[in-house]
Each structure stands twice: as C-alpha cells, then as structure tokens.
Amino acid sequence: MRLKLKTVFVLYFMVSLLGLIYALMQLGQRCDCTDHDMSRDRVISRLRGELHSVREQMKKTEPTKLPKSPLPTIYVITPTYARLVQKAELTRISQTFLHVPQLHWILVEDSPNKTALVSELLARSGLTYTHLHVLTPHDRKLQEGDPSWLKPRGAEQRNEGLRWLRESTRGRQREQGVVYFADDDNTYSVQLFEEMRGTQMVSVWPVGLVGGMRYERPVVEGGRVVRFHTGWRPGRPFPIDMAGFAVSLRLVLANPESRFDGNAPMGFLESSFLQGLVTMEELEPRAEMCTKVLVWHTRTEKPKMKREEALQKQGLGSDPGVEV
Image (cartoon, rainbow, N blue to C red):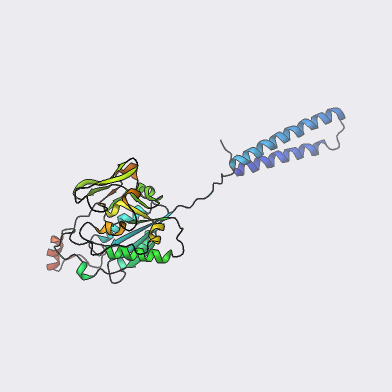
C-alpha cells in the first residue's frame, strides 16, 4: 500500500535523527578501533539502505503527470419559445448538460427580447452559456390549431446561434469543436455527447420515437451510411431528424453561407443545411454503427387547464406571480 507523502517525510526525519543520536553517543568513548569501524560501517550501510527505501516510497507517492489533452468543446444550439412547460423542459435539459464536460449551451429565444424566466434559469444553471433571441416572422409561425409539421420551426433561432458562433470564433478556424442542434423537448443520454465529440465532418446516429416509428436511423454497410431507415419520403437528400447529427465546428466555419432555410418544404429543413456541407458517403456513423438509440424525440404533453380556467372565472385562479 502506498504511503502518504506526509508519512514518508516523518519516517525520513526519524531515521536521520536516530543516526545522529547514535553518532553523538559514540563520541568520546574508548573502544577497539577495528570493532568500532566494522560496527560503524554496518550502521552506515543500514542507514543508507533505509534512506534508499524511503526515497523509493517517496517516488511512489508522487502523482503521475499525464499530458493534458483538452477536450473539443460541444456547442449546443437550442431554440426555445414561451409556453407553460418551457421552464420544466429547460430545467430537464440543462441538468442533463451539467453531466457533459466542456459543453457550451447557446440558447436562443423566439422572442423580441430576452425574457426574465430564461435569463434567471441560465444564471442558476451552472453551465457555460450564451443567451440570444430572435423573433420568428409572423408568416412563418404556426397558428393556433395548425399541425406541428405544417411549417419548419426554429430555423431563425438555429441560424442566429450559427451567426453568433461564427462571429465569436472568427480567426480560430483550426479550433476543435462540435456543433449540435438540441431541441428542448427531447431526451438525451449523456453518452450521446461523448459519441459526437470526435466528429470530423458530420456524425450521425439513430433517433428514437420519431416519424411515427420506434426509431429512424442511418443504415450502415461496410462502415459507411448507404441509406436511411425511415417511413416518410426516404428519397430526401438527408432524411434525418434534427437530433440525429452533429457537425464539426471547422466545417461550420469553413462554410459561412450554410444555414437552415425557413421556407424549406416539410421534412427538408435538415437537408437544407446539410446539403452544402457533406455527402452521404462522408457521414460518420456513431452509436455502434447506428444500432444504438441514445436520443429520443419526446414531447411533453400540453397541460389541460380546464380547472384553472374555471377557477379564474370565479376569481380564484392560481397566483400569476408564481413562476411555473
């Protein structure tokens, strides 16, 4: 068992002190010189042996100095908008991110200004973050009663995140890093972020509970992506969910015009961004060659407020000052 450094120094001091006391005791005493010399040589030899042993123990207690290799930063761009479950979902995703080293969260509100709810949540999160906002034009917004698939969502916010990222890393084109687009209503395994960290161009993996299927995924043969397992329009350039890929920071910086098309047809938002960056043959399969699901396209059920509305009519509604 390795000795603690403090214990080693105490032993070293005691051995040295005993040697000094022994030498002082011999001063002035008459003795047979031959026997004295032999005894002195044995003591010196023993002390040297003990000193060597102490030095070896000290070496063992020294921490091994390994060369530091900084992890590439994962830049996560998340669009968000005000709704009753917003704080709950941002709390959940932020606490997942806390378990991921070297992560920078870029949270972009669909709002004309930064809201207090999001600002305070970020300040308390313990994460490295950037807080942005940009309002989606009215003609691109889903209206009440519209199906969620009718118009692309979050395009302006993701593009705002890309704009900030390009400006803030200007002149650092050789920097290692990864860009990932994480919606606030999905569920993420911490392992997913380690899978994507070494992305060279565009890495891909399965997404669970998406497109009316148990999962969608890239199909890999011979280490390469050859097609996609999806139930809707597999002929799209990249029939992949937003949660199913990550892009190298270098690739993003080398292609400053690459962005999401807010007017893209249904299901083509991801393709509008990826087409200018990579080909299918260049995709990098992760998650055990795209056979392991590490992210799920979950959605929080919209709360039913019938009782709340009834109480409000009676003047007994919940205190609006309590943030939910």
